[in-house]
Image (cartoon, rainbow, N blue to C red; front, side, top):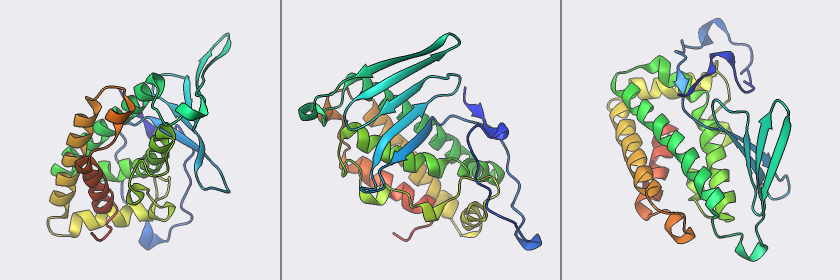
Length: 239
């Protein structure tokens, strides 16, 4: 089961005072399956120094960096940390621990994409708006997470990185309202986004079937193309 975000599980940045003409459209809360991703960005390089992952129903955390990784188990009687060491010369190889959580996080993305496709089909714009308060931030985090696992700055296409200017972590964002209004009012746009969502989910599911060897975790050109196309269509970027 996912988690219902109506209680604002992680910080929500309010988009500021809204005029009477800019009141946000209604959102329909529901259980969103996405893993939670938080980033520690290196101000000098602009890269993620650490990526923290957590899942619904657990207080435990996974910490991924370019080298050593960590599993933090939080319990009532204290915190237990398990460190997974990586020698610098082997840091570009995906470990079993990294592979496990990369696939686990990716599965939550697939689930969210399938929900999005269904809501687009049924024109559930209030649910699309609700998801938009969380999915863009997840996609940005996923980009850095994937890069940290692969210890590579080009593990994913640069076009897959979602710019901060394209979203707000907010349930009252006018950016979200304008985005979904474009989907709703542009002829056949919902169909284009449904196709992009289905293809992205399909390619991710094919990739998830691969084993934990580093060379088999490399993205196919078909997946890279589907990834970038989804980003462009979702964020109304010309392509």
